[in-house]
Image (cartoon, rainbow, N blue to C red):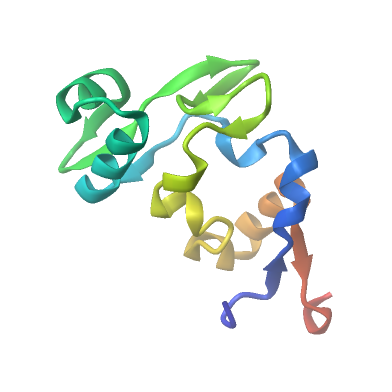
Length: 126
């Protein structure tokens, strides 16, 4: 991820509490292939899965959210263990966090630093 001014230490996730999976309402976009992998992982039919866990957003598909604390959480965020219930088959959007283009903007980057304890700013930028 050389075009980012930071790296990410995923070992910090163990003590974070799932801040990237919770908070303000948003979208957890998935491709059809990703949805199918999640269905297989959960051992339920595609129809049942999409009716229960997916919403259509324009021409895209997003996992739904549930109310959690003062905001929302991904439907697959386990609020007791504070971990992803579908981690092995999580969508690409989740796999690529925190390396999203939105965080190349300084204001958004500062918000990311507040949210994510796994961010390690490269020395040449600190």
